[in-house]
Amino acid sequence: MLISKMAAEGGGKEMNEIKTQFTTREGVYKLLTHSEYSRPNRVPFNSQGSNPVKVSFVNVNDQSGNGDRICFNVGRELYFYIYKGVRKAADLSKPIDKRIYKGTQPTCHDFNHLTATAESVSLLVGFSAGQVQLIDPIKKETSKLFNEERLIDKSRVTCVKWVPGSESLFLVSHASGNMYLYNVEHTCGTTAPHYQLLKQGENYSVHTCKSKSTRNPLLKWTVGEGALNEFAFSPDGKFLACVSQDGFLRVFNFDAVELHGTMKSYFGGLLCVCWSPDGKYIVAGGEDDLVTVWSFLDCRVIARGHGHKSWVSVVAFDHYTTSVEESDPMEFSGSDEDFQDQMIHFGRDRANSTQSRLSKRNSTDSRPVSVTYRFGSVGQDTQLCLWDLTEDILFPHLPLSRTRTHTNVMNATSPPAGATIITNASSNTTNGNNSGANTPGINSLSTTLPRSNSLPHSAGTTTTANNTNKAGSGGGVGSGIMDSAIATGVSKFATLSLHDRKERHHEKDHKRNHSMGHISSKSSDKLNLLTKTKTDPAKTLGTLLCPRMEDVPLLEPLICKKIAHERLTVLIFLEDCLVTACQEGFICTWARPGKVGLLSSQNQASSPSGTVV
Image 1: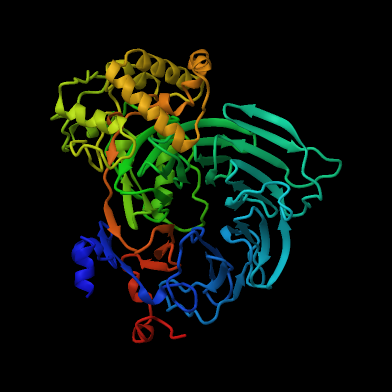
Image 2: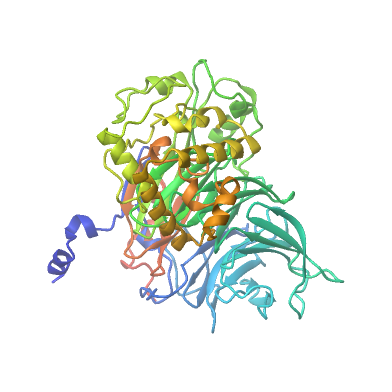
């Protein structure tokens, strides 16, 4: 029966088999079935129409050495458990706290790590109707409800986070595209807030709350078009990265309330964002099925990763897998500031030799250091991908990257830095790339695209005749980049062939319908061509905001494994394991190589499903 069902689905064993382990250069990661967390009845949750399952962790530093706590939402329910990780099997019969909500569903949550103790934790919970609740699941008391009457915002809460280093400030984003800064000590008032403009910039504005006595919200940010899907603070807490349904990543200086830089998705909305441990790189994922790596220093896309077959729902850096190799002195033709600028500390006080070596060499040694950043992504295709960001992508001007052998179908060998390749319309490879670049959705990408996990083929070169600004302007931050983006966009628009214009017109309509972009009359489009080039989704392709597929290296995943039956919604890297969760409400623990033996043998002998409830 099962075989015929699988055959009918056209999958067979290989397609539908869910992986329980995978191997990387570090070794084998194994799924610990006894460490699976879910609702106590372990029944798969019917996820139709429900908000994504999310997971939050906190360590309460209790004396037992088992201070990890886990919180997760499934449908209308919210659970709080002791998290035993790789050490012991999960006991689902004893949640520390369980709450069931009526009329609204939890959508996201965040612990305050500063104030957490064994007796008390502060947990913020955002809801589908717009409210935010502050609860203490250890003391079992609800302390405060924010936006209770929905006077501040009526739309779904998409992300909630404590402001780093603060015991009382937190930030909340909504599907309305607004973000609000709250203080837990202040009330929300009984009337709708009145706002006064504080600062305004390109596609964002920030207002203060105008009232006689201090009240929430302290600030209201309006960012982009459509929902603000997620935000993340930089490791030092000074910058804020936001991703929106309009397809834009926007990075702000949080305290100065100023825009630092922007990036546009290849297609559709951006859904998730994260920072590298040192704050130098940002990875975003979304509806273009890609992961995009953006340099914070250079304000430009440095690589894209293609491995998912559907929307990317979570991206996360692995703070514990960063390899650093000592390297011989060699000529370095890139910017010295990559190695001279002070390393931002990872934010975790761990005696990690890799981290200290990375910090020491980056801040004191002008010689290049070989660094590999590890990050992961999960998507609606039920797949987990792991990626390595290697030095030949990060520092493409090194002689090493030009001599390294790799498969590149555009060119047998990498061109020397500064060379200009004129793309030829009659070339099959170029046609493949262009068709991919002009087609909404990534699944139609030609298989001839150069794909490698270490492919520096275009980072130091200029790939099209029209894009000659790229090589020269990639290193600067600020207005220079924006000016060149405008110039590049205008020159590309002016030199399109008739056929390309038709395709671009179709793409413009398609993108506008999907990402709620700027819809304006044709006459005003002409008037605003220069200013709109930076933000109109139809005109960003081929600029620094959104390079073409062939203009940046394309990463391949180290591993790409189907690990669930339903879409994946969580990916968190911990010291001994990584944690994933799917929409059915199952939170899975994957032991890192060498950590699987920590699970005691007596638990291994228990029932197949862990603890019997």
